Image 1 (cartoon, rainbow, N blue to C red):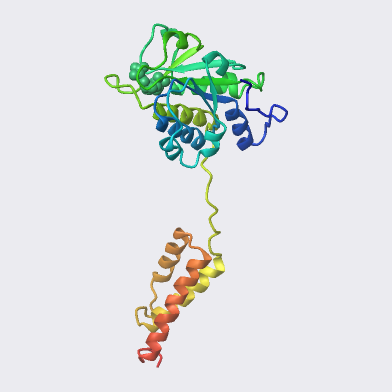
Image 2 (image 1 turned 30 degrees about the horizontal axis):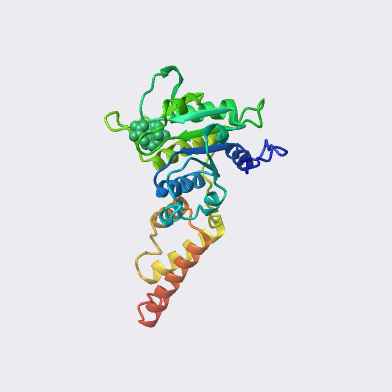
Length: 275
Ligand code: SAH
């Protein structure tokens, strides 16, 4: 079978973080070997998509892509549509520079064992963000629900990764293991990038606050709450409160609308101290 995915080697962006991340993640394939539950395939597709990956490969799947698979995939149907199948692992790994096998059990090659976090950092530094190797491709290989990866399959991997789980019960559900590995990769590639912030409106201007305070003061006089002869420090305290709260122009309008309603009521019921 020929490779269906093309990574856009011709543009390797260096400046724009979003496209650098996308370009790095395009060069990661997630390979599921001998999967027996369709739901795990769908849930894995969703796990990839939520972390920005898109290349899911099945090797000798035992599961059907049934209703459960599609239901677990939710909105990751594009990942399901682009999924590839191979009859053997070597074919699925063609063109890969680094292959890491996920295993819940310690095998006999401890020097090549990494945590998922170490795997992600290693992959970032050596393969996915290495300016010397801008086209490097890597694969994360996951085993069967009941028996994991065989020793022969693990032998195909340059290194093994383990999710450092509870040592007395360390075997995660397949799709959850996929999720954690993809999550760690994304975090390693993102580094310290801050979360996208929501556009917040600029706070009200100095003059809008002063007009609000003036309105507030007049209303408090009308309410006879504030003695105009002895205002004490009340207005300065209210000013500090407003400055601290960084209220928006819309919030100024709401407060002024309330003050106007209070004034209307006072004037209608004849409690205006000026009357
Ligand atoms: N019973 C199997 C585990 C199967 S879980 C065994 O003992 O090997 C299915 C797959 O999820 C595993 O083959 C592995 O690829 C992945 N997985 C589950 N838990 C993991 C863990 N703690 N660390 C790394 N991979 C794990």
